[in-house]
Length: 315
Ligand code: AKB
Image 1 (tube, helix red, strand yellow):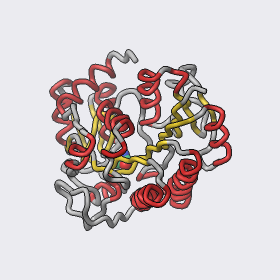
Image 2 (cartoon, protein in one colour):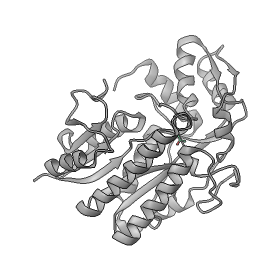
Image 3 (tube, helix red, strand yellow):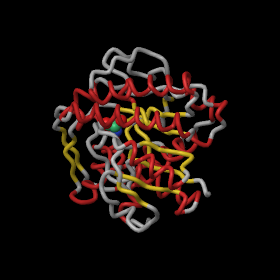
Image 4 (cartoon, rainbow, N blue to C red):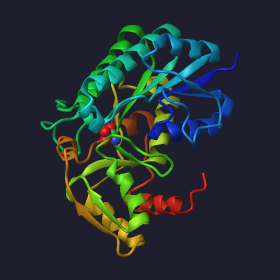
């Protein structure tokens, strides 16, 4: 029976684009998209889709069995800002979701990708060029769940040989899908508002610098770590992966080069505190050395590409 790839949480910002990219590489019928909700507009009619809750382990198992699943991308999660509002739901989804799928991976021997985040770092972490190994004392629900998740991934690899691979994503920016509930979401909204109204009110202060990555780089990193030979994956908790760092002011200045008259104002809200606990930049030398990670997009190249695509959205 043909082997297939399962994407859990396919309706989300990463899932929507990852499913498309994986189908492009492996053929549409090879990639089974799943989500707790019906397929979103971008995914509908583009290939196999199953509506299943990540917390329904037996439902997931059944989908895996029927489709001879050999690789799983587990993307279902609540992000940093939403998790602060829905503490217990976030913990349950982010933790029990992961543990259930790790158990399935142990039984079924599929390769698993699970995303961690810059959120594993906290206010006591060195914030510039944050190393792979350093103080990790996150003070957000999301960060605590990501740090615990990293420990579980390493544990399942060491104790049970589960082939789990993970990246600490920075903020992700793309034109094909919307982010939801994150602290870095402003860096996507700003493009839409710049084109719509030539102005944007940021929910972070002008000098809040955060690590960010353009979606084509994030997809290459994600598929890259999954395709790397197992003996190149030396870190089984999660790898730092970086591309660029910028502030709301930096991105506004870059957008203004393309949209003269664009203006930004700042009204920091509760997300400011989250951003202030995260790195300004982080060091991904281990990912570059172990499995050949390279980014392609910096702020200027990304801004140009985003604006071209948002103005001429040919998928
Ligand atoms: C968030 O802002 O919560 C996410 C993340 C950095 O993990 N984009």
